[in-house]
Length: 426
Image 1: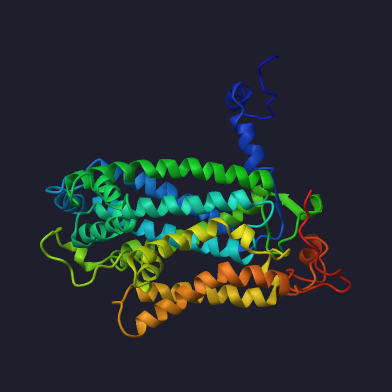
Image 2: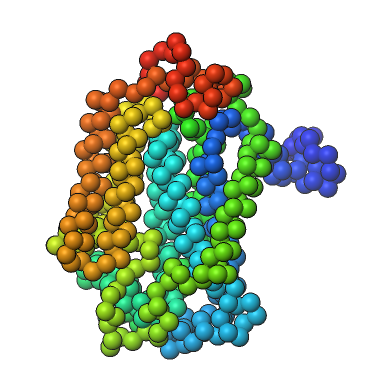
């Protein structure tokens, strides 16, 4: 019949819905029979884990918002009331508070996987760019959420970070005034931060769907970094990767539960147990741990404007990464020099995290500047040059041979392989 979808669903109710709105057919095509490279490792779990973390954050955030009061005179006390008087309020708050950290851990590992296996290269450039945009929205959402408890570190963190925009020539002061809603961090600031913190996760969901759509159009990368040659290289997403993702989800939830029930304040700052006091500046103003590397980059540059440019540049460089890496080979498995340098990049980012947690003095200043220098050298200098000079190992002929053939998991070249070829383009 004209206008109706031909549905293969066995359940009569689902079939009736699907013929009129083929949502179940779409889900089956995109998450059931969708062909996926057969050699995924557990690094490919982290995309699904990021989605689970986002759903947990939205669900707990909605219930917390029902009891939170976005007023400078009442915000701190409303959080204490949630912790003490609201049924299971302590659990909601601790899950939401530590969920932010778990979300960033999962996303940072997801980004590392993309860097290691070259998931940002042709034809997945737009997929990568949308992913970096997701990171920016996450960071903005997390920053605004950290301000809401209205403790000492919340207030002074908001003051310091928003003041950074004053370094922008001509329009900086106007931007700061607009962010504050006045001439200092006060009630209008808290109100707009609460509104945006509630709104942005739903924006994040929309961008996540764009990210998934781009992924399903270009197809997934894989640990070998080579293109799928045919049906023999793929398996259906369900049940193979739904089961594998469920294993990763159980491990993720176990670690999450241990953090919430045994170490709920381990990643927090003691100063945030004190109400915000504009007349008393804390001895050390330190952001949440997931912002520490960027905070260290900011403080590594003596000039305020230069520090702000470098801090935002550390994210901006990721947007153009697909064009900075000139190597025709995706996966670091076949790039011996790049494989060492990517771990050196990870070490430099971790070092920046430690630097950001300490006062900018003594050896920490030196470490911060060295790590910052390497971070930008890696993307802006090393990758463009290395891609032209490095000699990659021979690539496999297909995904199937290293998976089921004598090469095992694909870690080593098979006898008689041809030299590495550039990635296929139409």
